[in-house]
Length: 277
Image (tube, rainbow, N blue to C red; front, top):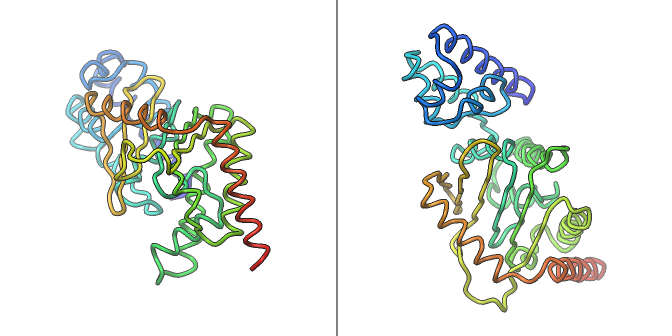
């Protein structure tokens, strides 16, 4: 489903929610209290500004006695085959986030990837697929990065392990381009990047990616990912522990200015390597 069609479908979701709520004779505040969100949050669902999580859609069905219609619509809308099943909901949430904090232990995060880097990553994980499949995945990844160009873009904090700078994904020229891209975003103050150097030794969250997302009118969530699965976490106690892990990661990183210098010097190393091959 194209982005425009998907947005139109979410607008239908919101209009149908408003119609059913008003037919039931209850206010946004009343429905919000029944499904454990604010009335303002219900209003944002109805205007297609925000998208509910699955459990909220299920509670709306239960409260309005709508025989599962909102759950079915949610599952259809969230089912974007360009993304792994476990990641599709995360894509929706990052479009709504006011702040995203991410840790990447070995690979540059998708929101920062260039097309050449994204193609190399996709091909490495899928060596027998068609060119069309590769193009589709790369296009989807670059579309995600569009949120960083919006006037209402979220604050985006990234902690990279030095591995992400040193693993030559796509070769020296591709890595030089990739690191130059990150440096440009840092200098434009679009993203705040810090690097955990090898000299830091052991660090928090060593087993996989970590992402924290905050929202205007909803509780924060955490997302963790390993090679073949991801887990969206919204339990407040767990999210608090994830925030603490991220604080420890930032404490292990070098300063933003030192990180920028390291990224730019590493890009230059790659450029020199590319020029001699």
